[in-house]
Length: 214
Image 1 (cartoon, rainbow, N blue to C red):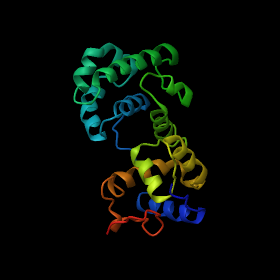
Image 2: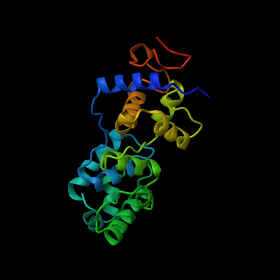
Image 3: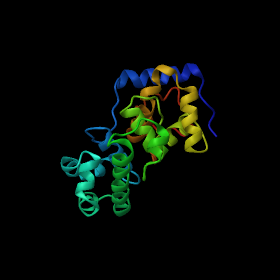
């Protein structure tokens, strides 16, 4: 296991991330809290680009739980059938929409427990919504963050829960809100899986990864 970087290194790294991208944004398109929940739920085992392509038409006609229920599962399927596991995901979208209407007055709740009670919404999805919409310092650990965290020593851990805690415990407080976005973008475009682009990495001098590329 890669050792954890010290506080000085963490501050230097996130200062650089902030300088390069002061207000990082998620890449899933949405117009409100509800469409964000749906988009993130649909993104499991799918790319953001693919989800955005499918949801543009869907959200144009159904951007609230009530409208989604009126649309119905079959028509939801027609919109999202290019996404993996689309039948199960369409079923979950309808189920979560019904729960939002019945139990929350059509509004998206702002607690992790309530979000995770929705079909198709796990901890990662809940954390994305809490962070992006409700501006809570929740850390949504995906494969990019897991890889970057363990390679670099920023937030090492044997599983996503340990990595999440490492971010919460070790990233300086003022960087917590945007931490997961900076790490996702770094993993998506620089610290890629097969051959990381160490030659253009802005945090190369702090990174603990021993097999750096040029």
